Length: 244
Length: 358
Image (cartoon, chains in turn green, yellow):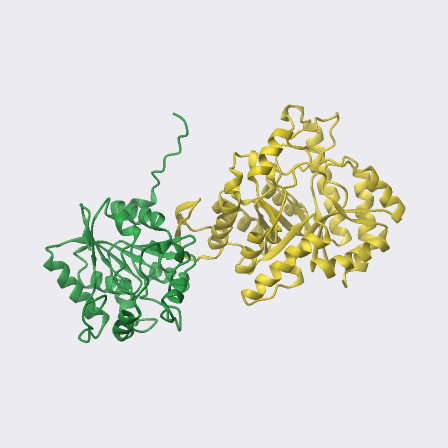
């Protein structure tokens, strides 16, 4: 999916595949949003080639280059958060700023991937599944096809090599966790903050793992502000004049 | 049973006061105010000596009935003057506060009071919405979110931002943190379904007030059911019940005092405001709608001589399950300080030693 105009914002989806959310549409008001479907997800053939997350990241890096994008903002969701983190480590010069939505790169011990019927998975992923609206639930057949790839690539709960390299990543990074995330413990956010030299951790109130579905406006506001001003986004621009 | 003394500061007005809320501040008497705070300390020293476990303070505005618009200031003043008693701040009205500021002030207080702080967080009574122009329709949501900000600010070790619905912060990282870890004993105060559920979800205590044993008992039962759903069981110390008590030497004397109590709240909103408020300020007990208390006097649930009151406390424990009673031993706003002191003494000497095992 590609829409909008402005500085490119590349999005890498979660383990459930590409799902266009209201947040994508809100982001297109400020950015040229390019949301990839990664190989093996959606209706693409099963991906038996990619063996590791760094491999998937370099494949995605190549695909982005093919679009003629030398530099861009990068956003990754959950599983795709780990892909985005590896991609930023592989090409730090290309990535202006990194946004990680409920990233799965660092997980509490024994964190399980959501499982069950599509409805059960939705209840686990979202604090407000009713806000999915017309967004379709994941297709069990597609899920069955992608599961081996996801299991292969998700890696250990704590990946020593990745965490060592994160300490040298200069890219300004925004890490977002929903306060009601039941897939990845929001407390994992503090590990990113510990490791990454330039990291801002933000909790999105009343959101589950799928923040951009649960609170699209809140999600887009903080992401847009961060991408525009990076570290300076901590300076408030909210006007409080009630009557001139 | 643990016992908390609810301190309301007894302002003894030198003249008759209008009965409406807000009470014009121009008739405030500085001498009487100054004396009220000094007398409060003397009274609390006695309360501490008698062995009460906590002294509690609350947040109320724009009237002399309860003279603690900033309970943090009263709590700090009390904590500095008393040595052993726990200071229960029940509590800041969360929806009209800056929750980060509340977290900071309570952490300071807990540290300065050497871990003697107990915290209750609440939405506040109906009239308080008028104090700082809070939309009553938003009060519940702001309370829940504000409480989450406070808990997160106390416990999150890394600087973080908060992207809320009613509150937004790019950076929170409070100093000092509370002395008690992970945070002071904290209660969500209120009988509502939302408040009980919040307390259960966050492993907090539950505080109920003023209703009959049966009505507040419905709320505490709902709270315990919710805790069970979240896989834990609260201890009796995690249920606090605030109530009025009229204690006298004999039952007859106490009943006589009860008959003399005014039937109306001392400073109530104008009828038109009250009626409009009732339409927008939805309240419930464990999910069952109740009308906001806006004009009637608060009920007195413990009345009698020492023997009767001990039995009432026993019954309260059975029905409400509270392990802490937060008592107003004479109606707040009453100017009869002598009667209050007699009740304190009677309670401390004739009741307190007999309810410890309940």
